[in-house]
Length: 212
Image (tube, rainbow, N blue to C red):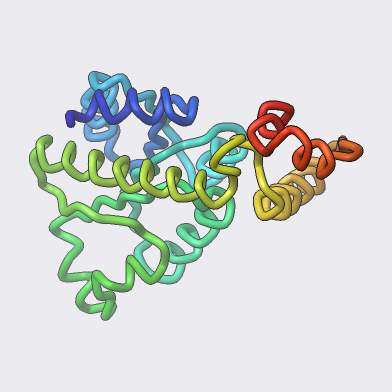
């Protein structure tokens, strides 16, 4: 499977346009290169120019991948990743490390495994080839697709496709938090079907599934 095919599969299966949020500090030429490279695979790229813009974009849209090149790689960076994962837990985070910063990381006693403990999904060391970069993007999107498939099985009835109670309990907490944060009203509609067990017993579960 090629990268455009994977993007198309995500779009068709989950009605999601593949989007990447790109945050690169102090390197506009490199940022433009990554943007141009990704768009050729029918991936929408949104650029953030500050950490505040990252969170504004995450509140407004869904991003399958965040690409981050930041100079804050200890306490400040770990809290940035934590806040991103809190706001967008499904999004995959790819960080770019400049080769020149590796010695600095060693002095700070930052291990590559620390990135994963913070919530980073993968990293790539600059300089790198565009083919290597494409492979990282493909891997993360593949993981995203598998995660969505598992979540779908967890949240939906396999026969009817109706969301189950587990999903309701998850989403009501998310929506309530979002409504409080953005200060807008939250409305819940509840529908009760009378005598549905009787209907299933008399006409069969297949007929009941059609009613759903």
